[in-house]
Length: 74
Length: 270
Image (cartoon, rainbow over all chains, first blue to last red; front, top):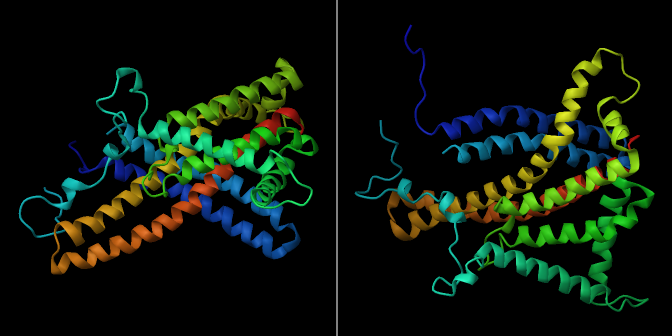
């Protein structure tokens, strides 16, 4: 069986697009739940924002690795 | 199949001028200077300037503190309180104040290096060269290992890391290797890459929109191209504002994670 589908052009861009899906969902969940938590308990805003940013940083790393790998292999 | 052309002009297209990795390559500052000065490139100059900036800032703010602060001391105290109340105390706990000198200087060193990406003339975040985040992350990593082993013991450290109590038995088969991998290998890697990649991507974005504006408004001005040029011009302004936000956020997050690693080393129970 021959090739079913082929992609040409800049594969790094495609890889980054794929790499951004998961972290995109993750960051959305983090900030969505964070805002909800702040709305429910405004007096804990500082603590929640802290953990929101921490989780955001950890999640975002995946997308950034996908971004850099494209350049490393180019 | 050729790439779609944005512009119907003859000869060169914008595709030939898209900024790539070349905007991060800097030759020695004095190209005809002596060979022993070859290490002095624009990024190293920015690192030196940032180190100088934090030294001068801290010196002027805290050299002779007054009971009633005025001038730079005001700024310094607000900055100190910010790092202490947002980073040191929540992440490390009551003994977080002992780590303030390290956290304060890390935060502002990185902040100055990042902000040099939007300062005219400098316009290159020094942290967009991975060597610099790697060194900073290694310092934190070595410190974390040292403190963990000092406070928990070598066996205790790995036991606390890989076998946290209170979980059903079979879970540990999966949990232990993941925790080991994430704590020992992925942690310093992502710590460095996060800062690097943010600055790298941000610098590339600003350079891209700025060169769109330059190309379509100044180099090859056409009726159809002008619209794209104006969009590029506006986007480069918006992206600069966004970059200032990202640069501050990344400096904060780097310090926050450093504090959380130190805190985890000192107090393994949480």
